[in-house]
Image (cartoon, rainbow, N blue to C red; front, side, top):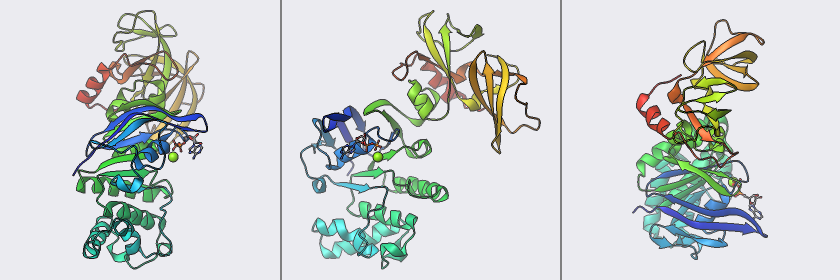
Length: 368
Ligand SMILES: Nc1ncnc2c1ncn2[C@@H]1O[C@H](COP(=O)(O)OP(=O)(O)O)[C@@H](O)[C@H]1O
Ligand SMILES: [Mg+2]
């Protein structure tokens, strides 16, 4: 039984301050949607509106075809996992997992099987008799996930579920969550995170939030390769954002002509050119940028070069160099036309003018 989630112009306010502003967003049945944004952007509030823990000031929330805006949390058919596990410390693992089932008056005989199933899915079957304090943080989070899954929810809400774990555990849990989703293809997942790697890795689509508003939504590839706004470009991955003037089929950066897709941008207009640092090459080539090295950072597999190009700082991530240039050295950088995206000017509300770059990037499969 699959059911998607739909926000229909949902607003939430606390004491007169709007913290979620007319959110319109649909999570398709079986889809993993990441809500990605900086701290305080309204992600948790959006999730809590689905769960039923906050009441929208305006708008409706739908789960499947049902308008659940007025329903209490336990009648919404959702499972929820938050950052700090929130297990009951005095209950054994199996009783924690059974909790939602008992609350829903599930027949006793059925509870045993469901608990075993949920613990099995999260790899925690051997720990059923333990108390939470006898488990590591990662194991506690698995139990919290098992508890959410035990009620067989149509919708799973995850709020920064990995952020209390250390980096190595986090990466293992990411793999586990991806596997769980493959085992439960009908469950729609809303996954709140401020971590772009988690969003890029897990999500079918990413909704980018900033300052109470939805800024962008798209597949990870779309947002990464063809961001529509400067905010998205710099929040989903690293980006060089260079101020340029549009010509006809070209742009100019401080007098240097660059061949990039200009879409329907008007000649003479100001715009921002977005090029990912790992797609900038060192040495001469098409779309050459000449400048002077400002700083060189060795990062193991790569060198990050900061190059001053006519007063603009350009980042280039190149494969580890045997003889890296030194600060002050003159260097040339270059990039392929199809690796550039032109954003119309404006701090964060710019509209894409180079969407065709998506097709080029997806078809080409090049890499820098
Ligand atoms: N219960 C509350 N009372 C007052 N303000 C709140 C409450 N919950 C959240 N806020 C405020 O709403 C804004 C959005 O919070 P939140 O949705 O938790 O953001 P995020 O999850 O993106 O970090 C923040 O400015 C936060 O301080
Ligand atoms: Mg939050």
